[in-house]
Image (tube, rainbow, N blue to C red; front, side, top):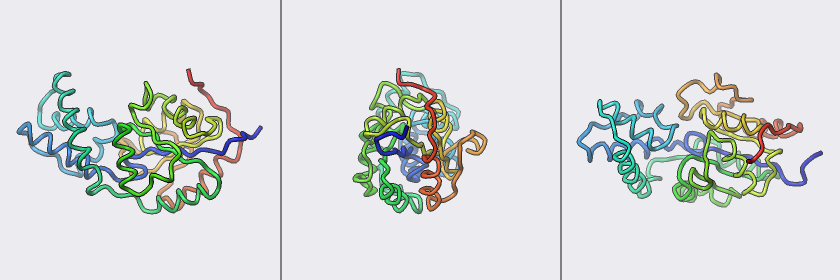
Length: 235
């Protein structure tokens, strides 16, 4: 039976809605410079971003032949977050067609939400700076709940916070963690190939890969049309 709640479309943020790499790499390079280490070129760092800020820092140090003890990594992570909070939307930009696609989905009666492994405060600030805050019923980060992607509960709880039904939702993302979490949650998943995946997203088994946001609304509405059972429950 069709849910009485509107369908929900859940979006990842980095590499899905927006190209955040320039500001993330600039922050990484600021941290590396403080440590007397060489910076990372933008092209070199593109595939380093999808696993989160701590992994990004570790990879930046690894490129310089350095290892980090856990306590030092934690301190640098705090410094990274503080710097990034002040510079999170200097060169970051929406991918082409994002705003129009969101408007199309909203006009079709969909709830929209963000489920990101950014910390929630940064995600909200960035989405506000990009002019999209009023589009989303919920913006949930890695610290919003006790778990984050690839745990499927991160997506399912985001849908519930948005006021939707986890049985009637679609995930849109760019990375292994997005696709794995959606699949474990029983949600169809749309992947974009222009984000921050370390492997081609086609190899990760998404339901559909789109190459421009102009394609998104029709694809999502088609995926929402049939009833699809959810594979996982919120524990």
